[in-house]
Amino acid sequence: MTLPILVLAAYLIGSLSFAVIVSKLMGLADPRSYGSNNPGATNVLRTGNKKAAALTLLGDAFKGWLAVFLAQLAAPRLGLGDQAIALCAVAATLGHMWPVFFGFKGGKGVATALGILLALNVWMGLGLFVIWLFMAKVVKISSLSALIAAVCAPVFAWFLLPGQGYFPAVCTIALLLIIRHKKNIQGLLQGKEGKIGQKSAPEK
Figure 1 (tube, rainbow, N blue to C red):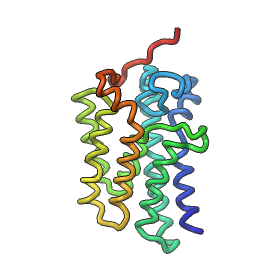
Figure 2: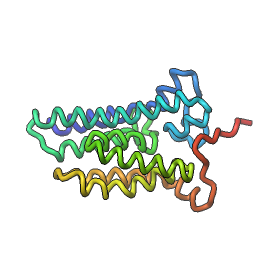
Figure 3: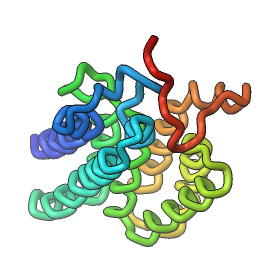
């Protein structure tokens, strides 16, 4: 029963939606009620509150890192291997996207995935972050930057994560990110995708 408990713990950590938590603590509107309705740092930035957006980004990345880090500490002591850690990485991603604490209405998982990948291999995480940052500076579209980083993630994992089970886990996380960006992909194809930092339209 140790593996299910470990995976459940990772899912519950992932279920902490910092976009909602930070917005509530700072007296901002629920991020699920404006803009893209996505509880993530990019949507929180639409309020114009950069501090709230930064705290959301850091919080979501940290919880992803923490879920994997705790699994890395616990797995060897419980007689579990790399596959258990890989499952926890996927579980934390699922928790962010479908959080039990917030009616299973979560974010797209970009920041959380970054934290997870940094925990699995710091060079992989940093490499993908640089790709995202470069694309964000060039195209100024968060979703497109995230999609490009997601496509690159399995390539990084193939070379930098030799442990059993890690490559399929990273592929799964990348696929989940792409699926969660379905509406953004449609917006990109229609030329309607918003720019980073673009404020949400005021309510009428």
